[in-house]
Length: 400
Image 1 (cartoon, rainbow, N blue to C red):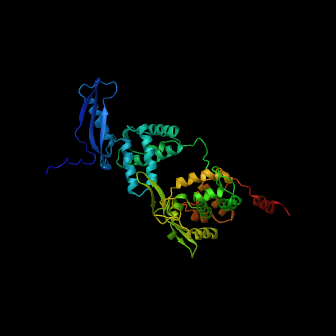
Image 2: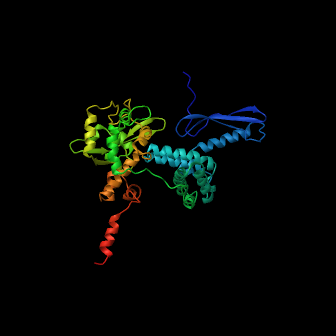
Image 3: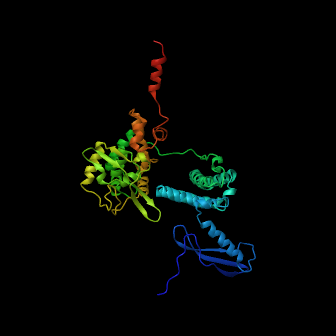
């Protein structure tokens, strides 16, 4: 029985063909097996403005493109290695180290944009000035956040060249700080009084929504009320809330075990992963009685779920955290909370913890922050009046 075509090795290409497409221009193409094991067709034309009599220039361009697609091993990294190839190696290492698929997708997207700025740059050409220019161009075209992501990947990628002896120091150290053009707005905080009103209105409001239903009917039909109660009472992240299963609730001890999240993986869809954003994210949360009452009522008429989660989609699959955010944005202005997000409830809980004179460590443990400073700097409310300071000064400084 005749054998088929032998498989290409990863990083190898098949026979190159040249085809004249007229006016001295040629098309060179071949099969190439990428790092992911997939065989793809790669092709290149004669460079513009060149007279390519036999197609040699087109083939040279194709071979250069193939070389760019190959990911070198550590021993092959030298001054001629493309920076884009180093970025691929670095991302592969992050994947091997268990970095989350969401983070990797974010980095890959940023690298895709970055390659348009420095895709052909070689290690020996990657000085601080060129890297800084590329990062500043990223900020100009795609914003400060993506520029920071690109800078982070470049730092790790070029460190591989340092370790291989291809450069003396990492040029990313010379790149200027990336400043945002506008101050980050962050999630709007919600006051205790607003939370009290929301917990009532989300179930009882007879105010009309845009389609003629009452707000309470909309929230019931979209299954918003129960998740909002859970947000207010726990300060969970959206991804954590959508991953919470009935088996994670300890009714006797009134605890919720937080140990998973729902994320969207490129090419796969929504998945529930046994992981949290930080190590501190895996935690046991005490549940207030109003949350326990909500869960008890919901358990009497649970939504069908393929994964056993408490808050599934209407079809019983995992619920998309982003879709939940869109549903809340449609109705939040009707509740007098036009700028709030699900993250606002998380921030509000932190502020309530602060107001109750509980420590920042308590807040960090409850919210699952890896660093107490994050809770203090980003979550505890700021810019409020503190009359107790004036009272203290009166007691201390005014002579009797």
